[in-house]
Length: 318
Image 1 (cartoon, rainbow, N blue to C red):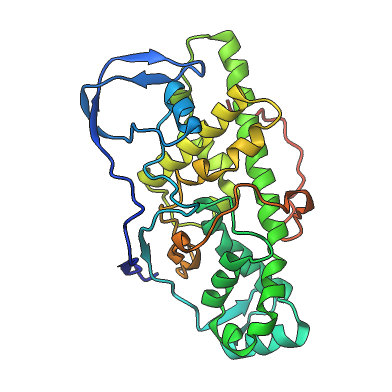
Image 2 (image 1 turned 45 degrees about the horizontal axis):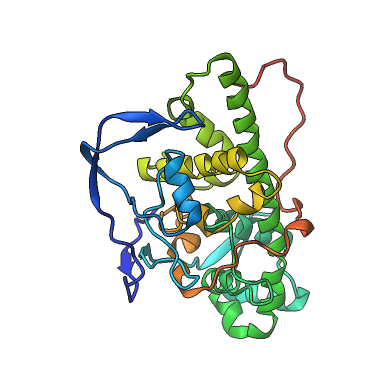
């Protein structure tokens, strides 16, 4: 697989300057998380931009490195996309170049199932960066993603691109529901452990295998091993949902699926095993992001393979 070349986007004006601070002594938050005080060297942002960030600091959680400006994500250095010359149907082992793909989609007015699975797996790296999209009636993020992955189709049939892109909103909503449930289940497991040991600190409790388990649906199509930076960002995202579950009641889920959670991961690079890196390459600062997806109630798992049912007596790892 070719290592992608990096390119810088036009402006860095929205990036928050990260002050250098130090840490040593600690106190403990309600989640059992150590709150750092000042003394050894680490890069953290300590100037909260809103009430949510004030609460995060009070709970001993790290703030995202960046913040939202004018409802837009910060710009960042992104890898180039590598649009494939052809795709292979794994069931038939037949390859189709971009022109044939364009013709097939235009005739069917939809993406064939085998190709849709490829698109879904490529989209997963984008979901790891942001769980929120732009407004569904625009759906520009997914349209631009498809235009990069299927450039010939985009050039030949821009008139039907919108309808094709719209079909992927259901899958995105399903992923949001799945991620929420995965993290909530780990939170409930942690709470049970903490009932037996009140001194239990979540940070050392949360292992790399827990992060892999929670994000497995998406990470299994990304480069291995996961980088330390990406693991830390996903860990902070998990902690953020813990915070929402701890502090809020009826609207904990809505609080989690806001720009705050996305800012932990939006500038990370999750490269795909395929090497196409379409989701990693997109400059998300161009889009106005919606805090809550208006399509969550209409989610679908039809694009995800059904897990094989097998009887097991093994208990869930704690």
